[in-house]
Length: 256
Ligand SMILES: Nc1ncnc2c1ncn2[C@@H]1O[C@H](COP(=O)(O)OP(=O)(O)OP(=O)(O)O)[C@@H](O)[C@H]1O
Image (tube, rainbow, N blue to C red; front, side, top):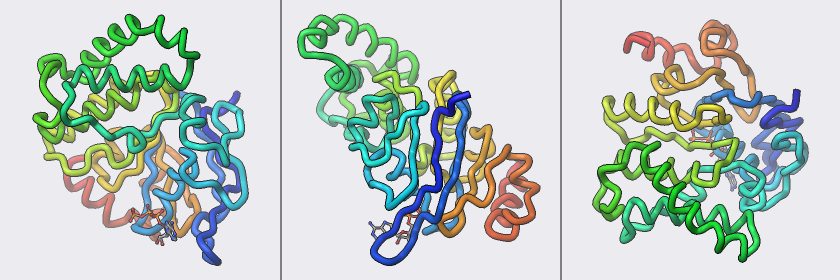
């Protein structure tokens, strides 16, 4: 079966320093994967390599079987991979609905010719209404984005990220800065809106990791030292030793 996302012997040097050191990873369609690891391990660099923000020094990135390494972010996006961070630029002076519609139009603009784009404007309105419901912001439809709470703004970002119907979604620390209650609500929201999609998150919060992920990739010093189910990763001696021991104990202490 073709993987939704596959990394093959991926490497990235900054100057003489090898930061990503031969990463292999095969993510099946529909999996929710959390990438975890200590500070400076290379998680963000990995995200940048996948989303086209950085070109690898060597190795391959495949999206649904197609090579995307070296492509620019918008090209990768056009092929069905959306990263929250690329389009998190919420327009503060536009309403929630208008922001979502911009997200839809923006993705249509990439995918279609101008004429087809124009004929799709009605569809865009409908799609924006649907997104509004999906991210639970119906009551805020006409509120300016600047007046939303922080958690609502993050929900709006998720809406914009999924607006184009990408099959692979990358989220960078989606619950960072949220309260516990907001985080729990947001995990449920992310799960709902990514049903049937493939999700990758970079995450520090072990509560979020174990609440959200079907599989966990542990990155230590530019290598993936484990890629498995949460239970298996928790039990992995190498992971315990390299990174997880105290973090998991904390999460378990918190009832996870
Ligand atoms: N553009 C760059 N030029 C040079 N070095 C870089 C660059 N980007 C990242 N690095 C280095 O690569 C290493 C990995 O960084 P990266 O941000 O990918 O780690 P991370 O796992 O995401 O860390 P954190 O959890 O702290 O966000 C770090 O040592 C960082 O200083």
